[in-house]
Structures are given as C-alpha cells and as structure tokens.
Length: 179
Image 1 (cartoon, one colour):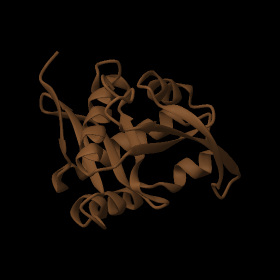
Image 2 (image 1 turned 90 degrees about the vertical axis):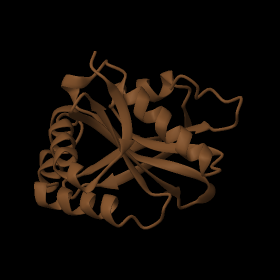
Image 3 (image 1 turned 180 degrees about the vertical axis):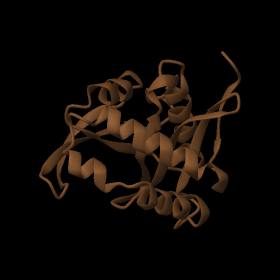
Image 4 (image 1 turned 135 degrees about the vertical axis):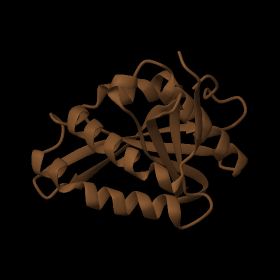
C-alpha cells in the first residue's frame, strides 16, 4: 500500500470531499434513503457547506479531517462539539470512498478524531447511524462503540428515516484503542 495518513482538510480539498460524499451516499444509501432525499444534496449545496466547515468553522473544535493514500484523497470525517454536553463530541460524518475501503482509512480517521477529542478534553463521543446501514454500525461497534438506546426520526421531505446513536467513552481505559 502507498503512504496513507490523515490530516486536517484544506480549502483545496472541498471538491474531492464533495465528490466522495455524493458518490458514496448515492451508492451506500441508495436503498436506505428516498431517492429525492439523495438528489436534494446537490454539488452546489454540498460545496457551500464544506467550504464553510473548512474555511470558517463555528469554533476551533469543529474539524474536518481527510484520509489520503499517496496523492489521493480517499475519505473524510467531520467532528463537532456535542450541543447537549460540553464534555463530548459528535462525529457528523465519516466516509471512505468504497473503492478505497478495507485499507484502514476509516480506522485511521476514527483514531485521529478520538485523539483530537481527547486533546480537547472530551470524555465521550457519539455518532448517528441510519437504520439499515449495517456496514457503518459494524465498523463503530468493532472499534468499541455501542448503541445507547437513543433513536431519532428525521424528515427527508420524502418520508422519514430513523437513526440510532452510538457512543464511546474516551477514558484511558475505554475500548477505543486500535480504532
């Protein structure tokens, strides 16, 4: 494998982040989300959101990281403070383009997010996984994350979807090592 690493996203990465997000969502979520919900996230909408997230994040604790292999940007993760707890963070998204899967990129992204969260003094992390997204759920669970019983229903404009919340402790003895 070529050199693989994780680094903070740069404004020049926005185009690749948008491409990865849209192609991955349209592939991975095709059977889980209504087609109109997937079509609503256009290149222009996504580009504007990622330009803001990378160029002018609301706080220093809002971060976007990218996974690279050699010169290729292959995945990304976005993390932010938890609105309900100053001691926790939320992974808003963590995606690796499917053709780059099974090469450790998601695990490197998750480990980098956990390292930053610990440095920020967060004691825990959460993320939301769409019901039916067994791949994402299995990934987090294999890294020591667990469902905490919280479920939310989102209106896509073309119906509703449910998401389950997963969490992990960032205490030194927690099972996040090797994530």
